[in-house]
Length: 239
Image (tube, rainbow, N blue to C red; front, side, top):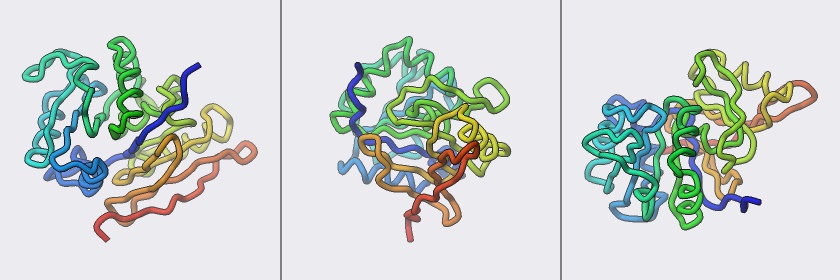
């Protein structure tokens, strides 16, 4: 039996440095502040994008001068080379990028990343991720890993239930997630809009954040055969 997950996970529906023209993001600023460390150690994991070089470079540029950055490459991409699970030790923040949730999960399991993530989170490292990097922490999710939006049911399970990023930002996300929760295809869970994030501690929601006033996050529950939304109170950053 696997022990219950312990630690902090920040699930970004969209936003952060990767959806900013200049790399600046109030949510990313909040992530750094949450570490409680001056010049924290931050590792970016771009597995879901196939370790896209430009994506990792945008991360490094966005965090330059305010964090000690590293990139975990499972594709042995230069200039970072192969990272592996050992790189995740003694990080203050681990930030997972977007792309294919299904590919991310398969490669992490193959390379032994999952147990290390669970261990470092229990020791105080903050886990965060956007899009596929949000989906991965849940038991299940809504994903376009296979082309059209589809349910995925083999997430890591650090967070219970299902996750849905880009809730209002991409056509069909909201409607399909509500339908899948309503008919039992996916379990109840959380939907997070672009430019919003939900903070979980030991599996429980402690706060919802927004870097734009209209960004939302929702708890999505089943009522009969219908998925229904329960709004989360948002703290708008910078206000």
